[in-house]
Length: 168
Image 1: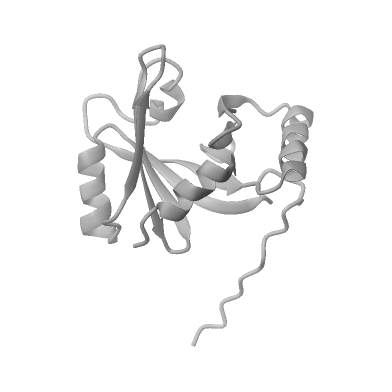
Image 2 (image 1 turned 90 degrees about the vertical axis):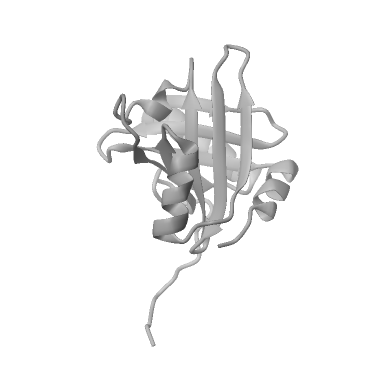
């Protein structure tokens, strides 16, 4: 039997990679095909979805699945303000690419600390959703790592959503 070590997250840790890791995300230009790959090759078959349009005419659809103790996201997005999702995808051919590591912040004090770290570190915010009623989020570019980092603060409706995501 493995002596695997797991450490509890430290909610108020300083450092952009020192928050509680909660999810990993990929982007694709064909969500149906990507989900077939995740199901047939990687065993992730059950998902819940969020989709919508923005006032600018952008579209997004995201598949969510619990697997291996974390949430996996597969994102298909297009249009204004969503370019950061697609910049690593090739044009004219099907692809799935890793996009971001996701971290969760549970408490208001941790969220304020995160916002201070973003300001102090001059982190480039690629995108944010700060509605205050579902899941607040910041995406930052981590160019040295070759991907983005996302920080989420689920509120009551967001907690309910994550708890309803199917487990694989």
